[in-house]
Image (cartoon, rainbow, N blue to C red; front, side, top):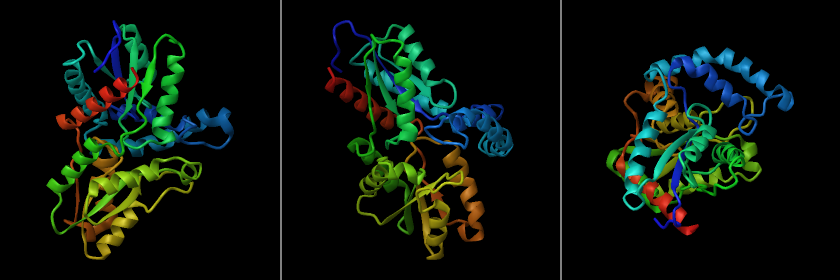
Length: 318
């Protein structure tokens, strides 16, 4: 990595985050529903937080049960820490002292905390890398907003922002390799991405187009289908819904290999929504006919491609 004289660089990995224990679920939900970038509750900005408190109070017990079923909390922080540690080791070979921090949007360690920790540790340049392969205002955009607001307190600290890596050759190659090594000849490839309110897409959000691009590159020459999961709230969402699409494909007597395409590690959307909820909703017709691709989690090859993205981004801005 090319560095300026005497400059200490670091990276901050950005993620939505997740509750570490079931006791954290209520606060986690309140943080999500308080974010008007993601969810615009009725009553305007003034009533957003009161409504968020009410919704989190009504929903947290049900969501706590879901987390109980996957081990009592989200593993996102664990996998992020593993990746951060490996990235530090890789980048540190060419830039001694390089550090990789973690900043979560909706649960600790929060993004503003990560920025302040980096500055207090003496780092003079920060690269922000979202662990969302595809860009959306609701995820990457929301995270960058918090990062920029916090950095306004430190005008002397320059920052670079990595918008996405949805079509990065190393990323799509690794994803394609995961598919090729795990899918069987009699299985149909079904990509499942986190859904997005249709209004975001209508307003120009590139997320869906980037998801489609990732799917096309990772599938290589295979037949594949694309669907969207995790819809909540009474608004129009991008489709088709993963449950509906899986039901349709199963009705054609297919066996399904589900690839979570907008996620890079295991969390509630993979461990509960796909592994537990999807087969339960589909019933006996899904028994033994749905498998999910394993996630990158602590794969050092994923850390290596993230390190490459960081180094290339910083070098191009020196």
